[in-house]
Length: 271
Image 1 (cartoon, one colour):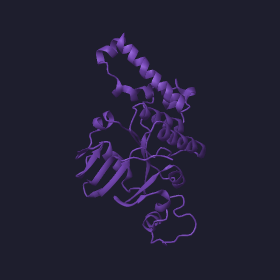
Image 2 (cartoon, one colour; image 1 turned 90 degrees about the horizontal axis):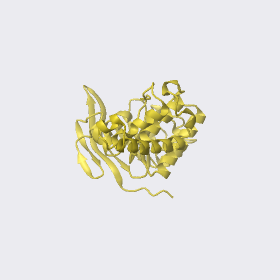
Image 3 (cartoon, helix red, strand yellow; image 1 turned 180 degrees about the horizontal axis):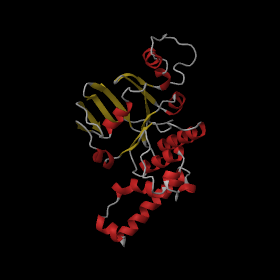
Image 4 (cartoon, one colour; image 1 turned 60 degrees about the horizontal axis):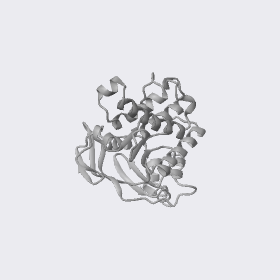
C-alpha cells in the first residue's frame, strides 16, 4: 500500500484576479508527499491558474505558498524550477526543430554545474558532465519507451508522442513535485492508457509527488489518490475519489443544476 506523507506544498487563502475577473478566491489546498492529486472542475474553474500560482507564472494578490516548510507570498519561476517543481503545459511547449533527445536534455540545464565557458569549449570536466547527463536522459527515453524517436525533430511527431517528450523533459529535472496540465488532452484511448501507466510508474518508482489537471473522469478515478474540485475560482470539494464523485455540490457543478444527493449510476459520468 502506498505511503502518503506530510504536505510538501500548501497554498493558503490564495486569491488571484485579472482586472475585474476573479480566477481564484481564497483557495487553500495541500499537496502531500508521494500522492497523486487530481484537480478537476468545469472549464474556467481556475485549475490552470492554480498551477500557474504554484510554479510562479502568476503572482496572487492574497495568500501564501509554503514549499517544504518555507512560506512566501509567491513562488518565482526560477525558484520553483531550482527547488524541484517541474511542469508540463496544456499546449505542448517544445523546441519543435530539436530532436527528442535534445529537448529532454534541456531539462538537465539547471542541474549542470560547469559554467558557460566550460560548456562552450566542450572539453574535460564539461564533456564528462554532459555525458553523465546524457546517460540520465537515455534512461528517461527508455522509461518512456520512445527510443525509436530519439533522433527525430519533435515537430514531426504526432501530438501524443510530443506530450510524452514533454513529460520526459519535466522528468529530466528530477522533480520532487510534478505539475501536469491536462497531460492526456487530445489523445486517443491507447495513448491515454500509456500516459496513465507512465504517471503511475513515475509516482511509484521515482517517488515523485504529482498534481494534475484532467477532464477525463475515468482517468481521475483510476489513478488519483485524492481529488480537489474547483468551480468559479472556489474549492468546493477535496477528498478521496469515491467520496468526491458522489458529492451533490460537485455533481451540480458539472451538470449545472441542483443534484440529487443520491444519484443513480456512477455519479458524474464523463465530465
